[in-house]
Length: 93
Image (tube, rainbow, N blue to C red; front, side, top):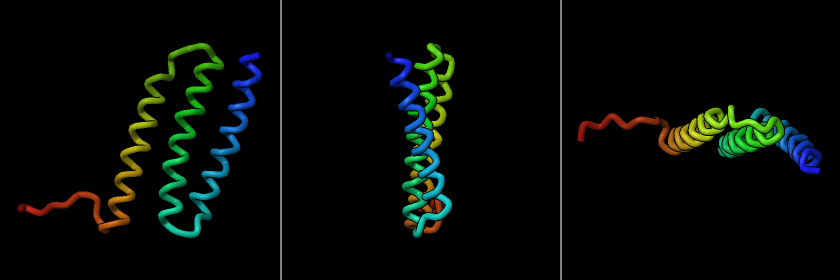
């Protein structure tokens, strides 16, 4: 029974990933694209987590952590770039 639920969740996550990809490519504004990239990263973490449950292994736990860290850093960097126009301030103050 759990296998059926995991497979249904994997299909739902795959559809969500396709819709996030569509929003990143076609998104009407840049903030919409940034939010879609963040949602894409979160969906990837969930998708890999479900794959770990489906395969009954913990081999991809490092992959989940790396995707989560990269998604967070990417979202923060894009938001800062959108707000100020640069990511790293180099003021000698």
